[in-house]
Amino acid sequence: MRLLKNSFKNFYVNWAAFKSFPTLETERLILREAELRDVPYILSNHSNERVMRYLGSKRLDSMTEAENLIRDAKETFKNKEGIRWAITQKTDDIYMGSIGFWKLDKKNGIAEIGYELAPDHWGRGYMTEAIEEVIRFGFDRMLLEGIEANVDPKNEASGKVLRKMGFIATRYGKGNFSVAGKMMDTIVFELPRELADYSLEIG
Image (cartoon, rainbow, N blue to C red; front, side, top):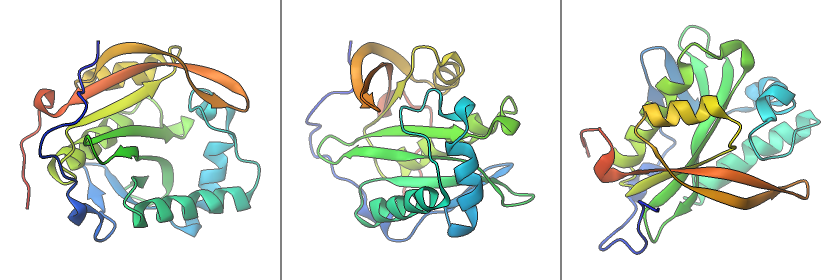
């Protein structure tokens, strides 16, 4: 079953969302653009086996690779191909993890959401808080028609959070992508605009 349909009529991306990097705020968090000062924390996360276990991307080995991750994110935003936010607490502005949209399908108005969080912050509802705000931005500001997520079948915690946000597991992606030569399976979650419980506040 697939909820998100192809070739949405009259779809367009709200390119104003990419005019300048959008900083988002929740009750406890600030979602902002990643900067070079975040490099040590990014390296810590992306070299951590517990964090990377289900991400489907290679672990980082150096500060240079972490810096390149930031530069790639900035270039992606500049090219209007996606947005990646650093997740920080309001109390200290220290990088805890990241969240964002990538694989932006401009024709059909669909983007894939991805995220990671340092283990010290697990189980406190931070990611749920961040996902909720990013979903709202996707529908209200980017005018997306739908959001997808690819989740490792063993990552039950991520699936639970997505279901809480209204996502529906629609299909099993056999060998969806390759990581270090190994084909990874995923459960595909989908959230169409019409099923999202968010009021539109388009400015």
